[in-house]
Amino acid sequence: MKVLVINAGSSSIKYYLYQMPQAEILARGVVERIGEETSKLSHLYDNKTYTIQTRLENVEKGMELILETLASKDVGVIQGISEIGAVGHRVVHGGEEFTGSVIIDEKVIASVKKFADLAPLHNPPNLAGIQAVQRKLSGTKQVACFDTAFHTTIPKVAYMYGLPYELYEKYGVRRYGFHGISHRYVARRAAAIMGRGKYDINAVTCHLGNGCSVTAVKHGRSVDTSMGFTPLEGVPMGTRCGDLDPAILFYLADKGYDVKSLKILCNKKSGLLGISGVSNDVRNLEELAKKGNTRAKLAIDIFCYRIKKYIGAYCAVLDKVDAVVFTGGIGENAVFLRQQICTGLTQIGIQVDRAANQAAIAKEAEINTKDSRVKVFVIPTNEQAAIANDTYELTREKQVVMSKQNHKHIAPLSKLANKPTH
Ligand code: ADP
Image 1 (cartoon, protein in one colour):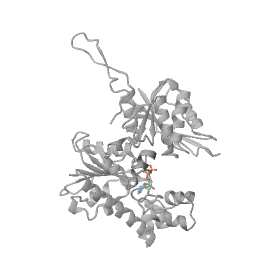
Image 2 (image 1 turned 90 degrees about the horizontal axis):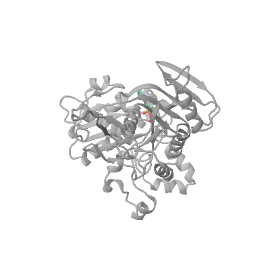
Image 3 (image 1 turned 90 degrees about the vertical axis):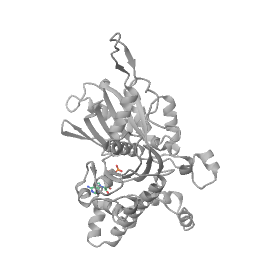
Image 4 (image 1 turned 45 degrees about the vertical axis):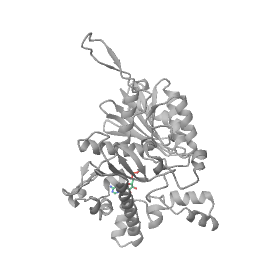
């Protein structure tokens, strides 16, 4: 069965065509700069790259081009789009409603629309991707995999804020958490590497990319996470500020900042970029810090210090910690940052081996010392594989089970269908 995975954002769509259940990627690519004159599709197939530049007004046009390309005579990998057995979408916000991935129907679509209020930048393009597929591939099953779903196991004590309770009841003001597909994937990989079942692990997972979040995973389930009502909370990120005294915003409002400028300030001008004044990329900051740029060094120091505090806090939340996991562009590649984050954590059982850490770039590796009570892993995230897998599990229809009695009994596997996967 061929499964198409779609991650549609406001200006880009990433796609992967998988052959399942082997999880082999037949083709993948990205459409960028949607809405601009210079929209571009880059398509990778058979170790070759094909690019085309053409104006794409919206996500729907982008999706049309992707489907055409996948089935094109010259650079395609399928005879026709009807070969696509199912489509899995990354959807950012599923509120409290979706505890796992689900087959998309009109009710799911209505909910994704409803939660656009909570994720105005993400849910609308996610929805546009779903609707474009509905139009071009009507009848093909689609699955929504939510970034928030993994975090729906967080207990109330961890998801409520110290605000009047009625704000939760009236507006849904609570911690939702994000990056759930990634945290779930790496926690399960860590369990598998340790030879355990997926619910037999306690871990602190650190997804450090452009956006960063840290999650406490207990018995394989999220019990707390650093991102909150929005992805702005938690550790400082490339351009987001992370945790803040909210009174700073009132103070700045008194100084003349309006809501719009405060949003831009906290989301686009803060974090590593805001502190350093030069870059949101840790590679640049490391170079500059080495040359004596004190603000670049300060940005790195603050970033590492705040992640370290979250690791410490989540070790307190979990009775016992089996593993700390690093993932995301920074977590997978930034050797010096991993070292700095883990320095001084010996008393909570975390010790990184310098040489093992240095060798672990963009690959799965165990980087703790032999004496470390807690395992430390680098695990490249693979959200698309997780989405392909959920989509396959929810949409495959039948499995032939040879009955001992009559050899022709067909047992439906659809018990899985319409039930969330966890
Ligand atoms: P996104 O959250 O958009 O998926 P990524 O997970 O790809 O982003 O992370 C992007 C960040 O990862 C970059 O801003 C950079 O700071 C960091 N990064 C990427 N590659 C490297 C590398 N080779 N060494 C150090 N840091 C890296």
